[in-house]
Length: 151
Image 1 (cartoon, helix red, strand yellow):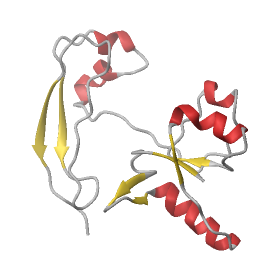
Image 2 (tube, rainbow, N blue to C red; image 1 turned 90 degrees about the vertical axis):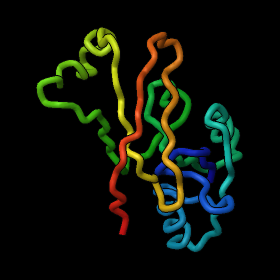
Image 3 (spheres, helix red, strand yellow; image 1 turned 120 degrees about the vertical axis):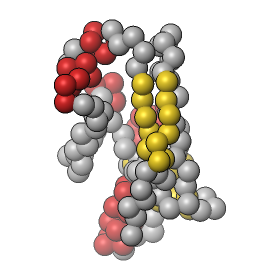
């Protein structure tokens, strides 16, 4: 079983290199039900199709997107998760962040983004994503204090 590095929350290394995540839980359960030993192999996403098509791996997990490029060279199972992500914005500004209208987002003069200061997992620091390449505008970001709602 191939997995990709740092694909939160699907596959990632936590606590002294232990591989965890939604996909790891799912394939671990599947291996137990089948009565087989699960061997995890860290791969680079760029090698995914070659490793599958050469028979080195049986399957790959790690939040792999169903893109037309991927679908031309590998087969995907039926999706087991539909993830809808978006920005939280004031209602009166929703059209400014409508990704069906990319020109509206590009027209923003000085976008300000905030990231809640909550760890993804207990003991893990939140990380701010890097600004997109080729975007000459500087994004202003600030970390806002948040409440840890973990149980």
